[in-house]
Image (tube, rainbow, N blue to C red; front, top):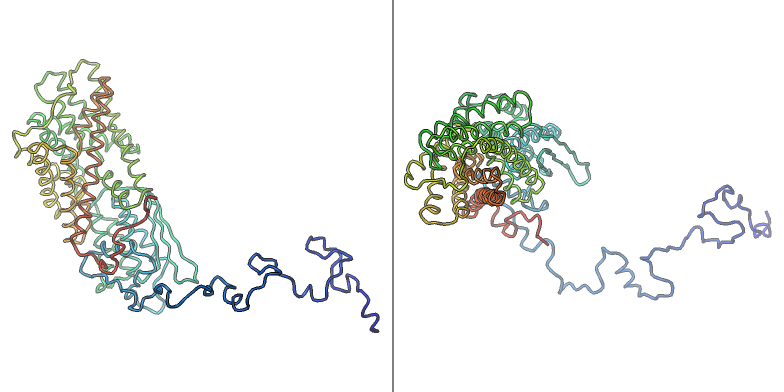
Length: 555
């Protein structure tokens, strides 16, 4: 090939272009390009220096990347580095405190500041079996959530189980019906995620205490429990029978209603009538449960016999307080456990779970309302003279009322299937709560809402102290103790006023009942938090700037 032929323009095929390419990025036919244009395309990014703008070479090299030091940077005026000269303070997790406090401190700490576990309990060359550890964690969390434990405590338990087997980069998530946990071995590895759905809820605080003991043993660095042993213990916990038979639960519901009727001023006849009505309602609820009816209808059916008993005594012209009979029957049905758990979840930042729990409380309460309203409406149509303005409660016999409050707490603990070793403590706690309420409201003439809040706060405080002493859950020490404070009389009078077409008075009484219920729930949670203010928390000195869960700031 001659030099002249070399200077001739080559065809598209000779230049390597495909004539069938129709993309808008293809070079049109007849467009002459410079020899180096195809090899050195011009960058058209907005981050390049525009043509005609002269920039100093040093400035261009310095500010060419967002990761380079800016031109105005001065080492002498620079802020403190990410790691101070004194080093990052190490978080010391005290080992002589319950695992709930240690794990709660970890969860409320930024992820980058969480210390790694000192040692994994399963120490072999292959490391922990991650899928099995996550499955064990989810099964433990399922039992805790089904037993009524708060969402934050469930997350703390799941976090403790994972860390006990060396899985430090894990994030548990708890909602009302779904548990999930994610573990990422390192920054470059794919995360492993597992989830489990909670479909059945059973109130058994004995089982709850056993699960807490299992988590406590797993969190103990001096106790080495293999995965097989943990699974075996968990299977035994699930197979364990309830500590009290069915007839004991039925008798306890009757004694609870009788004690509540005496608490609001009833006598021996009222005690017997309220007990019979509550036991009949309990048996009907068990029958509905055996037939597979939802819990809403179970509460509706269980609320009818106590109300019918009070209406029957009024129609028979028996000189007793029929309102005390109906009020006593309501005490055995009010969902105080779910209410406290729902408000606690809301106060700790678990708003989805809190909303679901409070919605459950609303449905159960509506079921109770329907059952009582049906019986009251029938009684009004039959000519029963029920007085919505009657005053319940008697201050002439405070010792009888304290004894009735203790009986109410005792029977409530039996209904919750608590351990026999905790029944005495919760009974005394209930008596103290009613004594404080009576001293403030009856003697001191303080608002019932404020008196209820203070009494519930003492219940939460004592329950948290007892749980820390036993390294167990605080629910068995608080839930039954708030039984005497439940707003049974306000609920009854509100329903009675509505049944007699006095809707305004009925709504006022129901609003008072809602205020008392919220005062109980907030007081219990506040008492628990106050106990943590005066007790040493693990990592409190190093994490002084983050003592509480700052999930939202309100703006």
